[in-house]
Length: 263
Picture 1: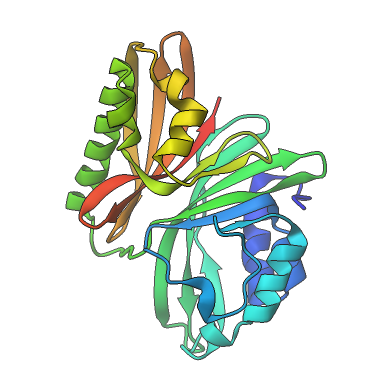
Picture 2: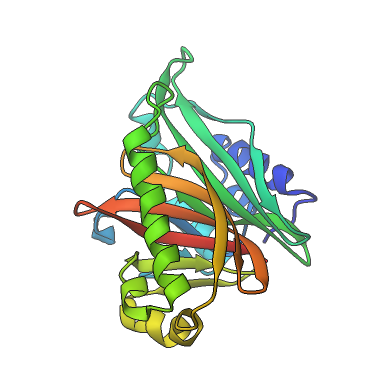
């Protein structure tokens, strides 16, 4: 739907409608297709109602509202939840039609004590109707009392391996720098899932196989127990652009799980 006047208006509408337990209003904070990628390995979706596709993408607002309505808020209320407070967001990178916001939330009980908190990279896009949240990259396991230095360094090293293989045009090692399914968020409305290395090779093998000089800087946005979001400014050949990554640990290996680019 994506009908908000500004990216931050869509961000705050997300929490306002969640707290109101309004599935239609909550769906209205998004742009579609919408995807939520979690660093934590998700369980099988056979445990309850969900109209998501196998890739985790919600194709339409009706799909998202249906999921929210069927799943309900009881799963939060049994923990003592009464409201979720969003953190003040920070702009990571932006263009006229896309923005990366560093944000997140804390769930509270009636006495205002905290249940759990998390940090999320929100990818917002502007379509004809306005701004909405296109994607969410959740680090999971975030704690304000732990800098997660080891996890941050592991994620930066994973990005370094990706850049080294890309600069050399070594396609097969480059493909091994990702966890699959891999989520790719392009321009407004462009959300793709690469199910495996073969799909990634077919889509981007020629592009990755061209050896070009790379210069980049990267910073940690947020770090959790098994996921880290990174911000990167990169020049490859003659092209300069921004990318944000969700890097996740799976089976002891830190690799890229989701990417959003602003060109």
